[in-house]
Length: 232
Image 1 (tube, rainbow, N blue to C red):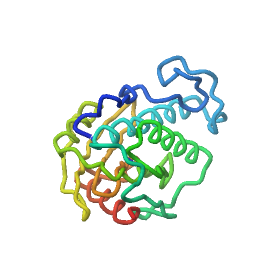
Image 2 (image 1 turned 30 degrees about the vertical axis):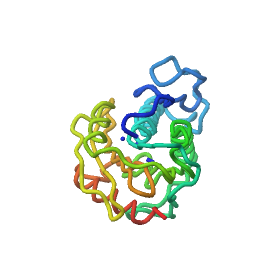
Image 3 (image 1 turned 135 degrees about the vertical axis):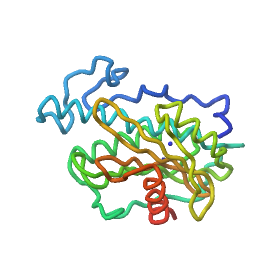
């Protein structure tokens, strides 16, 4: 992350918001709601209702790649990153999830973030903390390129609003400056709070669900804790 460049340069081709890449068991061009094929991912044995909720969760979370990429400004794409994110074994009191479903989800988010970064993020990582059925935080992002910088806080907030987080607000950024914004969203019974940041070293996002954050302000404060722990 990570998810809001003065709008992306002319060669920037982001995924259309709301149309993430294929989920587990989906062929190319078969995003959620677009006629997915047989479910063959790690949840194949789950009841239909749980599989459906898992697909919705994946769809909502993967949209992070679009948000983060669109809030990173760049003058000339440079390969040398300013910083990096290192994911520890636990965050905010939650252990890093190692179940097949959690690892699969993190892998999808990482792939989406990398494909949408267009050279602006390096060393992209993603990890889920907690569990898919309880309190959880998914963190994704990477080091920004040497000539990258954050767009304005208002641009970041507006980008979240445009992707379904109607109540998005900007918050004071962390120790390394930059911008931070958070918003909440519900989709078919799944509610999340997403915070996206860009500072002088990294860009990424933290997605809170299952009661892991109680408000936008709480999520913003916890995201700053995540940045402080993971950013190098």
